[in-house]
Figure 1 (cartoon, rainbow, N blue to C red):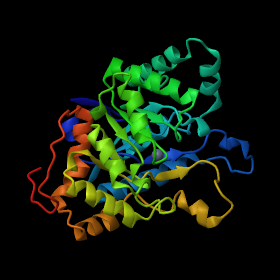
Figure 2 (figure 1 turned 90 degrees about the vertical axis):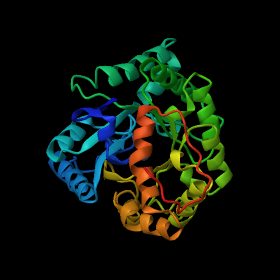
Figure 3 (figure 1 turned 180 degrees about the vertical axis):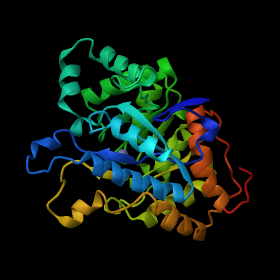
Length: 336
Ligand SMILES: [Zn+2]
């Protein structure tokens, strides 16, 4: 199956080792309102991204998905230049951020325009099929983001548009949650016709409860353990234990690993250097260097790690409908 990558069509069999939730750049809408922030130096930002991608290549990675929402400073020109310089596969999303942080344009439009959902659906479909503006760069997935339930009217409308665009194009969906209410978010999408196996419910690893992860897996979606390194939310040890528990429960087909790194953040987020460093201090090799060895201690065989980093991204993009439960426990030798 051919996927939209920034470097052009990419065969799903050629994804290789893949991180499913990392960002080249990001920033909360309106970061320019702090005029003390120096103007971004695009050359330097691109160099930083290229360095990070070269690190990833040296660790055997071939692909990343950058699910930055359109209104969180997504920059497809930077992605294009970085992909061209590195030959690395970069796939990106079309979508909007959660109500709390969404850009005002679509918040106003969806509140005012009786055809707002239709228009947003059209934007998503256009970016998936024709590309972003005049760049020709096409999105590969749809990003959905919600806060805690009850979801706001804005978030309901955004999910309606995302589901309609997914149904129209077959594009899969990747989400942001606040590590709770993932089941409700998934239900909102499946109620609108999106098959659960086309959805990654993101940031589930911020919740330590195995039953929460299991409920989302049971509903048929992929479960995002996609914030390794963000220890201010939850310790990585808890995340690692959660992944091991999912594998023990036979859910190896549904576990997605990533860091949610931002290689360059627009705007300063805190005057506290420690807080500020959280946005950029950890790197995209944290799973390879620190988490994989820890998972191995917890009984996760290297072949199972490969399954999570090679097979699950491919299965997600290809729309593999069947998740095969593995009930023999972790540490089992697997033919991937
Ligand atoms: Zn993210």
